[in-house]
Length: 269
Image (spheres, rainbow, N blue to C red):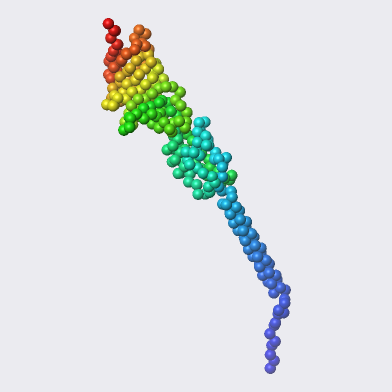
């Protein structure tokens, strides 16, 4: 009886050696990948720390870029926004600064954005331009201010941060309820044919215009007639004889624009 001897392959054959080399290669690749990841994380962490502690902060006014207004400069924005240096840029609240500037400066809109590289903030302004001086009644008396083309009230201390009106036109007795009517007059003021000097709002809401050549024009309180009234004023400026112009004390009742009434001062005896 014969027995067969099993086929034993050498432990160090070509296949075993190849697998060993592959395992060693994979380990080297894993170590290289791990080393690269650790290096990248270390560099990123170090760079982040440097930026947070040194770079991402507001240190001076040169880091604030203001555009959109010739009158409101960087120093005005810093003062109005109560900005201080240094302060962390990531802790800075753009929306809060926007609301503060809208409240303290004559602005229609403001957009504030953080800039990380290079660190700073960008401030884009749209200025409200006053077109007339204004007075309104308050509990303590008359308050001075200005209004823009939409008849929006601008407090005097705020208006002084921007430009002045180009004329001495004054709105007397400004009220929020008459803002739309005042705005309509301001919009049409250059088409009246007579230089407009004052817009007067009486306590009862009646509107009057003081013009240079036609005198006082009483419009009444019916704002639905205002467009027709202003057109009639422009027409009178063209057709009214020169003998009726520039008369001190002249009044035109325009409450009914289809039947304007001219009232001349009585000659002194």
